[in-house]
Image (cartoon, rainbow, N blue to C red; front, side, top):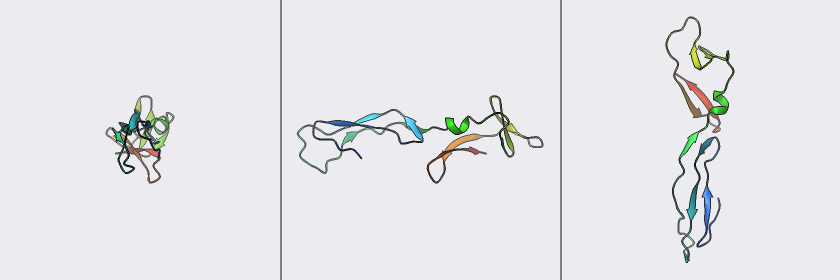
Length: 98
């Protein structure tokens, strides 16, 4: 991590695969306590699934198929697929079907 000297600040960013706003973390000027925590607000980070959500039309993730405008069930199945974005064990974005 970064360190901020008294009276200085640094930016806090979302870590990939998350995206969002950056915020500032600062150390009060005149601070002499090396254990003092920086003053900061947590950035608003959300997972970025665009790279995995942009799969080609016709892509099959049984029993769902990618169509223009979203996903639908393949022949022989009924309902409306529910798609969400999450991360795998290695923190890579992935689509989850329900």
